[in-house]
Image (cartoon, rainbow, N blue to C red; front, side, top):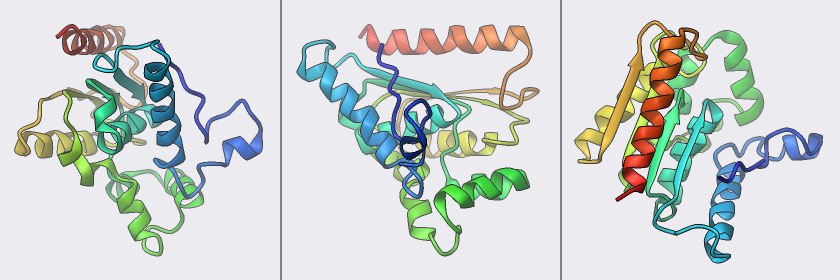
Length: 195
C-alpha cells in the first residue's frame, strides 16, 4: 500500500501545501504516478496489479490518475469524487465555490485550466474498471458528477460500477452504508486485481 503525501497536502509546511495551487490534478497526480513508478522500478509491486482509490480529493485523484496515467493502473475506485470542475463548482455551496476560485482561479478566466484538470473530459483514456461511490446529498462533490461519468463511461464501452447512496452526504453517516460501501469497494478492487 502506497499512501502518498502529494504536493498540495499537509504535513510538510505551507510551501508544500500550496504547491498544487492553480495546478490541482497536475502536480498531485504526478506525485501519485511517480510513487507507482518507484514501486514498479524497485520490484516492490507487480506493474499489472496496481489499483488506485481515495475519497473526496483522493477520489478526484483516483480519476485523474486513471485518465492521465492509465497505463499504470489495473483498477480504480473513486469515493465521493468530483470530476468536472465547472459543474461541481456550479452545484457547490458558496464557501466551496470560494475555495475553488482561491485554488484554481476564476472559472471563466481560467476556463482552459478548469477543463484540462477535469477527468470527466478525458474518460476515453480510461482502460481499467472504474467504481464510483457517492452520496446523493453531497454538497461538496455532487453525485451528478459520478452519474454523468458513469453514463459517459458506459457510452464509451468501459467497465464501470456506480454505488449511489441517496440519503448520504459527503461523509457517510449510516453504519450500514459505511460498511456496505467499504465492503463493496474492497470486493471491486480485489476482483480486478485477482485476474
